[in-house]
Length: 405
Ligand SMILES: Cc1ncc(COP(=O)(O)O)c(C=O)c1O
Image (tube, rainbow, N blue to C red):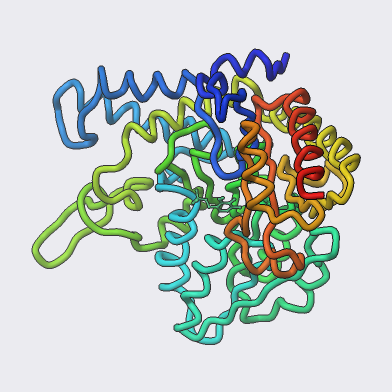
């Protein structure tokens, strides 16, 4: 039985007061809170196992190496990937940069084209812009008024020069869940790679890289109960094997002479230098926590909270929610504006009442401009949020509306 109230007991931070009020944490799309299981795993690692990996014959080094390797198995399994196709990174941004530097920059040439969407987070937009210097063209699929992708744009944009198609699986602004299977098929029918930004999907719903046939999929640990500075990139084994490393140095080599070096096996070939060992161990602990809840239950809970929040928000005068009207087509991310109140003012008032939300452009400036909003306020939910918190949030929104007339 999925019980958000019981789950809350695992999160010490949810007991703290903010401005004298009990914290209501609705900024989960930015980062999530951490359960005691993850906090304890970090403590246990440093208290009992800390050593550098792959370098020592001593007991601690062997334990740390095993724990770090096991973590790849756990994280990979969550998305239907093998452990050696699961590269640990710092975050989604680094994963996408790895694909850009180690695949696109080396394999593409002048005149080749990449198709992205106007819905992307900066990390899946600015990263590819860098390739323009090489004469590579960037094209963007547009959005409809309801925040869904203009799927018909793919027909217009795909050419024989299309070499890579990338898309955000679930938007961090409008919440839209994109049809990755369909977009992946378009990519592969046209012999292009399919790259998925899973930052807002992997933490919130069952995701399987094989089913969506992704060539690469990037996500972040900190958005799914894990530590900051930790993420993963899935890549198809044959692709990863065909690529040269992203970074060079220790741990990613097999043999080194003064003249040349050969590369280590996967995934180590792409994990140069001493990695965030403890971060990997804690990431796996976060994934184990989510697997105990089951990802389909996580999704169901978020659907319920999102549906309820959308209904209650529609009762607030002058409130406009961006994105799909049907909660089933969106993640638990609600960007909105309330009359003429500036999102930063609204977020400040909410904070005075202990409610943490995000305000601004959410690292998606082009999308915010297309929505004809200078900024939005964003409430985003996770496993520990409750309908009672939504009710409290609505009360504060009504108070804010009165304050600003
Ligand atoms: C959709 C999406 N993609 C990418 C990112 C970047 O994640 P990170 O900052 O962990 O690299 C985010 C973060 O908010 C996001 O929401």
